[in-house]
Image (cartoon, rainbow, N blue to C red; front, side, top):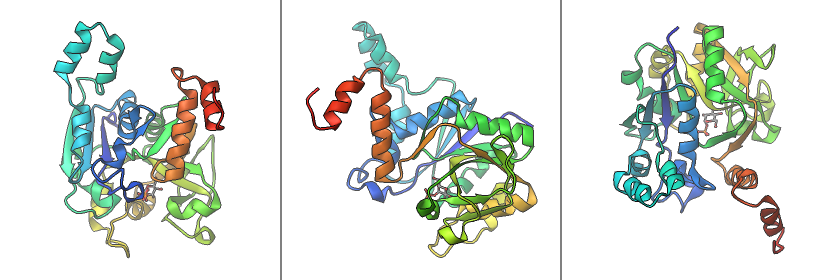
Length: 289
Ligand code: G1P
C-alpha cells in the first residue's frame, strides 16, 4: 500500500451555530486561544506525513487560504526586529506542503464535499479531517489511523464513546469485538436515535479511506435533508471493502457546538504554559488573581 500523503478538509459548512461570528469568517478560523481550528487540524495532518492539503471550500472562505499564505514583508520586519518567536508564529505551513482549494459549489453535505476531491486523489488511501473536531492527545490521531489502515489493509475511522443523548449528533458504529482499541465495523448509522444506535461509539472527524469510496459516494442518493452523507457511502464500504474503527486516545472537543468550543478553549488555556493557570482559575471563579 502506498503511503497516505493527501488529506481532505471539508470547510464549506455555513457555521450557523456560531453566527454572527461566522458571518464573515469560516468556523474553521475560530481560534482555540491563539490558533485557529484549521491550523490545529493541518498541523496534525502534516505531522502524520501528509504533504497535500485539499480544502473543499465555499464562498467567504478566503480567510483560510490567506491564513496559510506566507507573509514575507511581515516576516522580514520581525526578523529585523529580532522577534524570532513572532517569525515562528507566521510560519503556519512548511514550504514543501501543497495546498489545493476546490469550491464545493453547492452545500450538499459532507459526502458531496469529499467527492469533490476525487480528481486529485485518484487511486490511493487518503485522510479526511474535520477541523471542528479538535483533539488534544499525546498521540497523533491521523497518524494512528494511517497505521491502522496499513496493518488492516482497509479504511479506518476514529471513534469515541459519547453520552447517549448525543448519539444523534454522530455517525455511530457497530463493532462486535474490540481488540486493543480497534475492531471491524459491521454497521454504521448516521445520527441515529439513541434507541436505534448500534453502540455508544460515535465517529469523530478523522477518517482514512480507500479511494473506492468515491464511486460509492457518486451513487449515494441525498438524504431527506437533501445532503449526501459520507456515512451512507461508508455503509457500502463496510460490506464491500471493510472498515476498521479505532478508539480515540486523548480528548476530543466537538467545536461544532458552543459547549465543546468553550470547553476546548478553557482546557487549552489552562494547559498553555504562557498563561498562569492559577490566575486563570481565579479569574474563572470570579476572583482577582
Ligand atoms: C459529521 C458526520 C458524522 C460524524 C461527525 C463527526 O457530522 O456526518 O457522521 O460523526 O461529522 O464530527 P456533522 O458534524 O457534519 O453534523
